[in-house]
Image 1 (cartoon, helix red, strand yellow):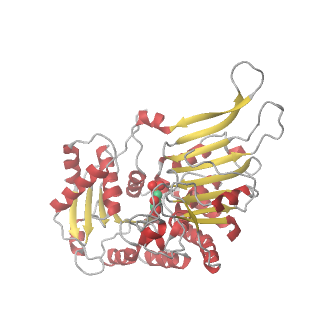
Image 2: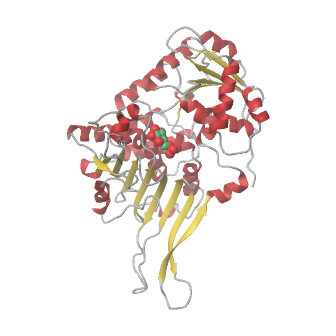
Length: 486
Ligand code: BG6
């Protein structure tokens, strides 16, 4: 099956922070791949901006380098890169000053979709939004796209939302959580709501518990200064894991439309119980070296007394009719054994075992793997094949998306999907302002709790599965974590 590519309408995509890391690694290569696949309609243009005084030729050449270095592993010809970079333009802008805005205005067309992508630090969000509005560069149909973090607590998120809404309507604001652009995350919705098999069982009568894991093998090298003010709770749980939890736990929306989906997600967040400190395990990876060449979290953060967590596990309860009695265990951390992101849904054991003495009968486990090796596995119990009577054994029903995708083309990077949705004006996979605020309202007291208690994260070894406390968190309930990379 070859996927259909429907070209988007003509656009002017203005990229603030065009020479920065995210732009080079993700945004520009994503745009290139959508161009390469034929998704750009007629007259699409990308206007890079940053403080640097670059010529358009220099920006084109830097972008060509970025595409070659960070683009996906697909055959790419020099002609394709040249055709793509011919769509690029550049203007140096002082986003806090007066210079450069006229140059941007002069490059924009009245009949093209205008998208302003703010790939810049959050401290610049409101200044840029205000300028875009006051200079008349942003029209009522323009879209503004922002990267996380959206504040660092409820008060700052509210202030940011308020400042943005002074200049843009909510339907113009695209808050990116790149997890929502991942193929398998969208597949979670397809699995739940395009199949009749799962939904009748998708509740606490049939599901014992759910484990959501986002484990990374890399540390915070190079990002220590930012990360130390944030920690795993703000950097990953408040946004990415929260989104995975919402999509797993939400009620079926009436339709796959922006507000239907987002309304249901907000209801999940609002149903979350406050989490007590006893239901949290925090950790910090320690150095592998005993000498002065430390490579532990505190070395990377440049803060020998840091109390910021690079790992966190929480037991979360969704207090509603569907989920009462079914805990969700969330965990995420850096420098763990392997890079694994997955949602594992543990169904209850069969109520009665008719196969006494034939081996254990366990509940089924549905594992939705986000990365690597995207796919879905259902753990089942079957008869051990062959003679020897009735003996039971475990077997997996396995579906690796790579097999499906091999036919329909390479998997697209999350940013490809999300950027095209911005142009199409589809906000379904973007976070609404109230959703972000609800997530902070739940997060703030958790962070406040360990601050008040003066809690210090427990050290764990690089390459391990996290701190011992995280094992206790789940063992206490007579359950076990799935192995990370096991
Ligand atoms: C980012 C976090 O949002 O997501 C990073 O700030 C993290 O700390 C990254 O490494 C993980 O994204 P992915 O797509 O590699 O799982």
